Image 1 (cartoon, rainbow, N blue to C red):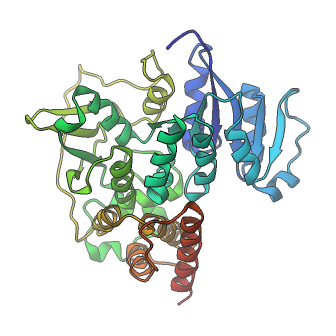
Image 2 (image 1 turned 90 degrees about the horizontal axis):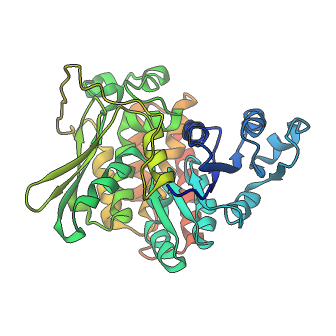
Length: 387
């Protein structure tokens, strides 16, 4: 990395990705600065983070939480902004070099869009942005001269492995999946899964929504869609393999049979750091593989009957249009219903499929039309849950 300090806006700073990002920035020896932070409802943690890193500004996107919070402990010189529209303005500010987009779900789309519109470099941890609006987002980035650097561990691995060859030499991309906590469950066992069961991920420490997505493997379905747009590759050349150790984060297979992979212990600080330091590499704080120990890597194909979300993701990636937005919104709403105890675990994916099959498909939607499709899908899931 050059000696020039990069100003990073961490959108979603109180989540797991946001906290890891602040750890990476803190260990960067002054080459990275957290110029701005945002949170939704966790405003007390936002105040604590502001005192730790002393950003130029913070955004609290939940108006009610912002009104309840005592902001008197904010450090001098830190500007307080509130509301979703403030987040979009902040993402495009002149004092921002890189936007770390770590807001979970469709809530992160507007601010990421604003950052790309302003020609920023976006370190993208919010896969839903490309799931919902992949063609529009990639076209916007190209038109405005913006960069999108992947932060998801799988897409970061693919991005790194792609540097070993040319696009026309790629035979396929292989995304790895841990298999989640139910890798060996039967369909009958899945019918009795509890919230606590679903939140007990064997290798990753993530928020509840992403952890449930890992359990259904909907996270991998969404990653197929993300990879299709991010790397401009046909969905039929994107595969998934189960790898419980989560050491190999993804592969790229080239036409000559060579396979390039990125390996590291499961820790999000490494892909975050790579995105923030790109195109260089710097000494970091992520754990390393211990090559003095004996260990083995295990791979197996996914069971599509027990994890039907994978094929649903392929269908959405192949169809495009409003399909990704509807699938993503339906899944967010269904997972919310499951976490509240209103929808059985085994009904999450069927609910999503039902909504997807019954939506008014538009092959060339605008951003506003995608957001309307998102709202419609959530309403449909609410009716599904109520019945």
